[in-house]
Image 1 (cartoon, one colour):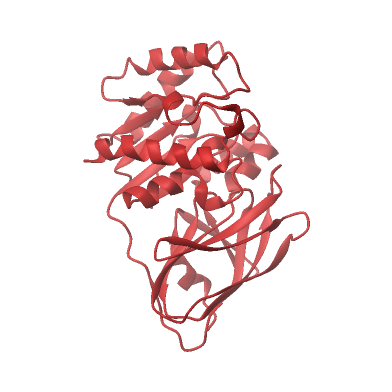
Image 2 (cartoon, helix red, strand yellow; image 1 turned 120 degrees about the vertical axis):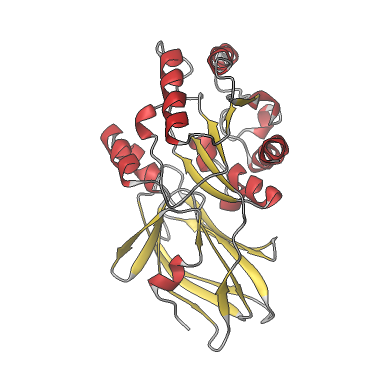
Length: 317
């Protein structure tokens, strides 16, 4: 049984729009205004903005197999990818590869034919298009129940999921599974405190917003001014929605990050309603827990998600 693009939209999580091309569908996590802003910054930033980070399909089925075809566009510097499959909340299977060797292809998963909730996580390093998505003939399929609470994540490459091999290990996904919430991941590699990219979408109404910037702009002379403008714009776009700001995590790549973290924390302290979370306490402070000195390894990304979810749970109460 092959699903139409309209049916796939009903299974989609972590997106606010869609792009269709030649019977294939892609899932967008940014508004048109936001995409236009990133395009104005440069082609590389646009590529990262269009990546399918945070996107998943969630449905219940008694199928014995799932199969689909993918193509990709806007792949970025990280060549590897994974499609991760969770069965009733348990990481069960993964299909991994390299975009340079497999720019398009067929993905299939075998199941036991019993009724399960399926969560399929998309790669975070490219814009993914799906077509001919199918399950075993005669199987039933229905959209999985959505969570009641929603969290919007705004940030840079670490929020987007660099440099984990398994897309489902990005810390926003970890938070979503631990807290049982819906997420929209608007992390874009290389981005900074930019008020121009703040844009509210009617398709996603968050109960909490998490901002994790600073690693790319902590040295800027206008840092304080940019942070102030960013949060005032954010509060205006999302009145009465709690906001948590995560200061830059510990790293070995940027030895002067500590001073930058203090500058950022000082500005954040001016906002009485802002929940400030010390990012340096969310990850392991050991060099071997970083892929390149800045981006966490998969183990450290999991730690990030666990510790952050504990902090966010107190805010969501």
